[in-house]
Image (cartoon, rainbow, N blue to C red):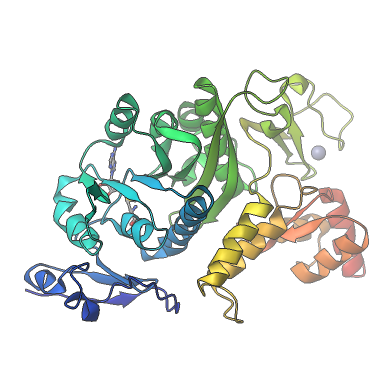
Length: 434
Ligand SMILES: C[S@@+](CC[C@H](N)C(=O)[O-])C[C@H]1O[C@@H](n2cnc3c(N)ncnc32)[C@H](O)[C@@H]1O
Ligand SMILES: [Zn+2]
């Protein structure tokens, strides 16, 4: 029986030339004849004007922005390199593969999902794009374990430009090395973790096993989730003689989900056998007594003190790491994403979409003066024994005093700033006339 349940995820006016809509399907052999869907149990969804079936697969509408970010990045890659071969290692119903083909104009997509029972729905979704272009296939569907498909590609020297690993929990750590092996130099890996327990410091030995980072509970746990994911990738790439840098890092509370786009290159950075800048890969220390945070390099281990205490008693300090302590995004890259999103009508015209807000906030967060972490305004208020100051007011005061300050895309009632906690407390007291 037909159980259609069409949902429109994004009312964006983005209309691609090859817009996929049932009303066009019968007029062009390029498109799937949607009459075939009538025979099966369908769960139809529209995302950016593209209609597809999620069937019985794992599909989250809330991940639409994560897919937008991937599609924009893959499209930028195609525009700059003139080619785009994508490996969607955990494709679910195949929506990303379809969007990489249609919107990013991928030349080829390998859509893989270990679960063979997804095959029908993936094939029907991808059938909206003609399978062959001349002699060449534009897409292929496989059902292998992700490491197997990645390793097979590596063994066959079949390298990809863009690899998407949309896995559960901290499983991504298990696939990263194989992904880097089968990626072209200067290629991109888009990787996901949904392991909120590890970022919260609730299972440090698990994060140690997965990403090589021992994580303790800290107030900016969700930023740590991004940093341990990047750090784990840095470590895996380093084993192979590559270095990776994040182009953007995206946290979403649905899940929670941590997503990072990494660019991979060969070789060491100058004076460094770890293929990475010492400043960007190290430890993070938080003081529960005064609320101050500091980055700690490898050479400073064993000498960690907090300015709030002259004693050697470090009981108030917790240290997490090693992990990525460098920038979470490249501002220049995010500007390119914003420009493309504007060309596509996804942002701009006063629409104020969530995507636009996110990208703009990522640009703000990329100020090189801003350190890791964020300061929650409730913590400032608690320590200052005042009401919680408004974000705008405290940011104005910080800017007037010459500090860098921005909002965080990760936590709505928090700021990123190079002002220490003591300074934020002082400002909160002044604002409340204390
Ligand atoms: C989060 S869902 C993918 C969602 C999809 N990328 C999207 O945007 O809608 C993860 C998928 O990975 C598949 N999967 C889980 N472990 C896998 C593995 N080791 N290798 C390949 N696929 C796997 C599951 O069957 C599931 O469909
Ligand atoms: Zn302290």
